[in-house]
Image 1: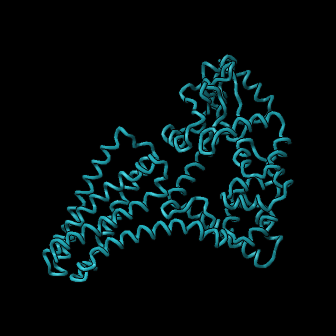
Image 2: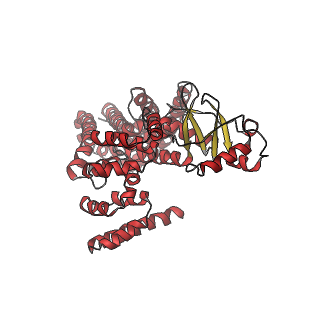
Image 3: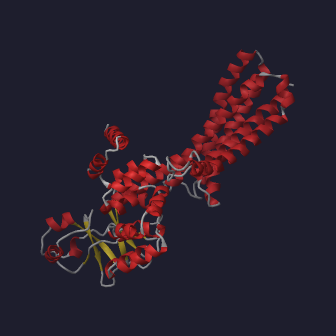
Amino acid sequence: MADAAEKDTAHDRLNNLQLALQQDDIAQVRLILHELHPAEIALLLESLPHEQRTIVWDQVDPAFDGDILLYVNDNLRASLIRDMESHELVAAAESLAPDDLADLLPEMPEDVIQQILQNLDEQHRERLEAVLPYPEDTAGGLMNVDTITIRADISLEVVMRYLRFIGTLPETTDSLMVVDREGKYLGLLPLTTLLTENPAASVGKVMNRDIDGIGADTPTQEVATLFEHRDLVTAPVVDESGKLLGRITIDDVVDVIRDKADHDFMGMAGLTEEEDIFAPVITSSRRRAVWLGINLLTALLASWVIGLFEATIQQLVALAVLMPVVASMGGIAGSQTLTLVIRAMALGQVSSSNARRLLNKELTVGLLNGIIWAVVLALVAGFWFNNAALALVIGAAIVINLFIAALSGATIPLMLRKVGADPALAGSVVLTTVTDVIGFFAFLGLAALFLV
């Protein structure tokens, strides 16, 4: 219910904004934007055609420019940055935390990057330099370097006095990081512990030592899995020597999970999660043309297999009627296995130690389902066309295709990952080719042997 309400609100915002734009009511546009969070403004910008985006972007409070640039998709961000003046980009960057600036900086023009770095104070420059070496899809790229560290040999009363002295806490702080003299991570001191334990107690006595540091090179998907399995809210990020680099909080992980879901969903159509729905026609056509071309090649391959049995089809029209059934059953069965395996891979449930057992299980499922539905389809085809031999042929073809579909669905993601390809993006295309070709070849080949 909450999701539905949120969608309705977003829908209403978009309608109200477009109505104001159609009426050239710029004052109303400003009023609508003034009441919104930068993430909500980013969503509106992504939902508008190019000419309306330009008008709305000009009405955005410049203080929000940096945050909005972080929230919009990559394609729209590049377009906005390209149209902004150098001084506007520098001002937008100055409002960002070092970890957020590290995500945005590589997309800035070189002269702007130099200006931004020159304007940073020593502390912010050091924090930015700590984040920049790590790719965006690692724990180091995800972490926030704005964190409070304390030593284990001081009392909670000293910690309280220190916090009162600095007067503020970084956003989403629920724990303080405990380090030794060399800056190596030792544990966490939750704020609840700080407030409820005896002030005379030492940090080392009451701190939480159960939360291990996450390596800076850990992929973000593994970080998300750790947060899920261990119910974490905050986790420290450390380098190879165990030195504390920063922290990751649950709000960062939520973004990772959402990006992964978008990636998998869009990948099924050969698109990326950064696809701009209002990108220029030529740009969108060029991007989609690649996968349409690949699909055309696979479709031609399936058609070539059918063409090999043209004479057989001409002699028995029922084959043409039943061919789509064989291909469709194989495609659905293969997609079920493919989806299961890709999900298991994403969760870290598949490795070389259990891959063979998973393959055997899926082959058994494919064989069992093949036999069940072969019987059903054979009965239907037999009564429909009054041809017992045809019924046996399509039954055998179904068994073969569902078995191959299970084999393909289980092995294709593993092979794609081994060669460095994205299973979510390429898996369905390869699977469809295999099930279509094998399904047609098995059905028409058996028909050529036993029916004609």
